[in-house]
Image 1 (cartoon, rainbow, N blue to C red):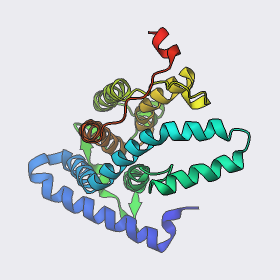
Image 2: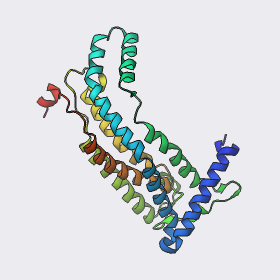
Image 3: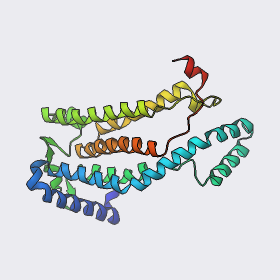
Image 4: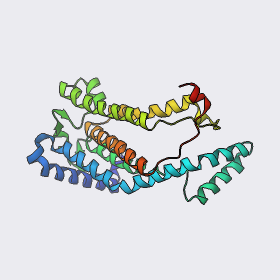
Amino acid sequence: MDPFAFPPLAALLDAAYGALTGLSDLLTPTAGASAAALAVVLVTLLVRALLIPVGISQAKAEQTRARLAPKLRELQRRHKKNPERLQKEMMALYKAENTSPFAGMLPVLAQAPIVGILYTLFLRPEIAGHPNELLSHDLFGAPLGTSLVSALFGGTATPATFLVFGVLLAIMIAVAEVTRRVFRPTPVEGDDSPLNSPTMLRVMSSLHYLTAVFAAFVPLAAALYLTVTVVWTLVQRVILRRRFPLPTPAVSRAAVSGR
């Protein structure tokens, strides 16, 4: 079943197509064949700029969760044999602090529909019954509607495809590595939960690289969006972490002895 056959979603996709092609036409005198790619970059920057207040809320929520972590660990220690009471006490604590365990997830959720629309715009040969002209655009010779994986297995990969995707993936991997090093979670003294184990912390750190893996499977236009947004996210997190610093946790002895 095609979800974009549903009239409201079809109208939304057509409106997004019209806006992106219109912006691309405006940029063509400057960017030429890469006008659509530049339009994607500008749309990404606009979306992230609109989400700055949400990013600030996310940083505040992260700071609050770090401040509440010792109290949550104490509740877990006190009520570990009574999960129902533990859940009730944790919810009461979050309510008293005017926050929730899910605070700060909005930026990810807000961007998911945008990535989905970009993915669809550069995947469908027709939009609302008319030819999809966006598929004729490229970035330095790499078609915006082709993914790295489909190009490899379809035998359509060109040097331009490898070059453009290679640069984007290299940027995403570099950003992931910087993010992993700068925002590396530290084992906390007194927290014996599975999430605080060295293995789980390593797994959580490795999740930063999933965006690069995902980018290899989506059309180049969506990969371009992801590249711009991860760079923006890193810069924004660094700035906001200085504005809303986290309390310094008590590092576990195992972490100290392992250094």
